[in-house]
Image (cartoon, rainbow, N blue to C red; front, side, top):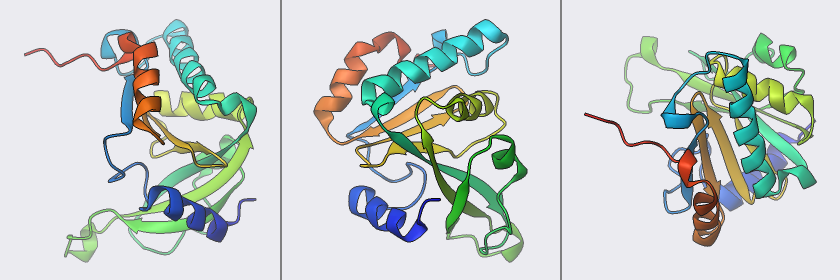
Length: 192
């Protein structure tokens, strides 16, 4: 199990704000799409295989194959207190997580009936574990959102979502190198 206090201290030192890649700056941020032509969802096993291949390629280039991954997963509730146990989906993914923190989604919301909290849970697994593919499949099929992956040294943040991935890197040089290696995976501008 990951110690949530230690995780928070390291997260706050390296990324300054809690959350899932939100408000962390854009200079070192990079977005890739996981299917050709910026298609969002897979229609068949071949497209799902393309998504997993792209994720594994990027994670390997980031150096994930050499170290365990920390994973942050989210559950949304209408109360700030953590759920007695994480969503059932984490059990189905066999990810051992501990409660990290709650984040109020919209601090400006004044109506208590519309307040929403993101419950954040943190865990760990080897980067070559089948748990990674299970998580990426859930994300690709829009069955899970709000997940992030990071190595234990927090040198990068990997935020997969249905249709792609947002990556935060430690330097602009790393961003440019990764972007140059996969220009055909960059988002396609929307057509009018």
